[in-house]
Amino acid sequence: MKKMIFVVLALILVVGMVQASDMRFGAKAGLTLGNVDKDVEDMGMPAEFEKKMRMGMTFGAMMHMPVGESMVFIGEGAYIQKGVGFEYMDEEVTMKLDYLQFDAMMKYAFADAFGIYAGPGFGFIMAAEEEYPGGSDDIKDFVKSTEFSLNFGAQFMATENILLDARYNMGLTNIPDDEEEGAPEIKSRTISITVGYLF
Image (cartoon, rainbow, N blue to C red; front, side, top):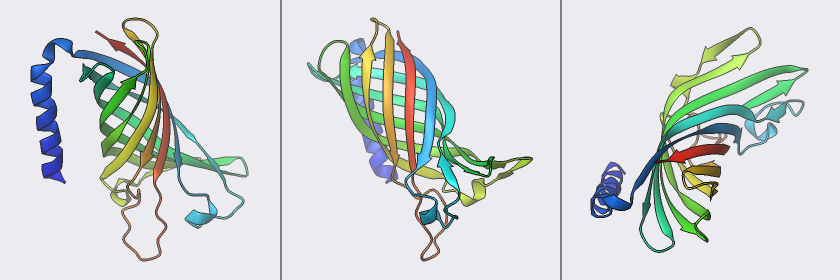
């Protein structure tokens, strides 16, 4: 896997050197809504618990590089807050998962202002905690240190420089670092809405 990542990065670098004059760099920031793919019963919790999205934020840098008449390669590095919340009798517990994530995606531009994209993501866990009324616990030791995911989204160029982005990030890696047989597999599901500026 490390070799594959190295080859992909090397190819991106080579192509980038060839088409450096067309590359645009920028920054982005926005809101996230975190969730997981399991219901409370599937995670071994009482049905009385209500699952809620975790609201967070994301910010980072991006690079856009045309690779054809209608195709654009998008490379991004961002800090993104994922996770999920649970509520029972007006008390809420939130599982907060923060990642440093790198995405490599291809966008098809229907027009100069609008396009859709998809591509893989790879995240490194930066912080993980369970927050409850009255305190919190660090759960980083119980969470996998890396996460593979897929991104699907759409972008709209509001102006020549301002970019609006809506994205769905689907985790492919089990969040708990638990190899016990019969333990539920829980994967992240995150929606993000961001505004970016391309220079």
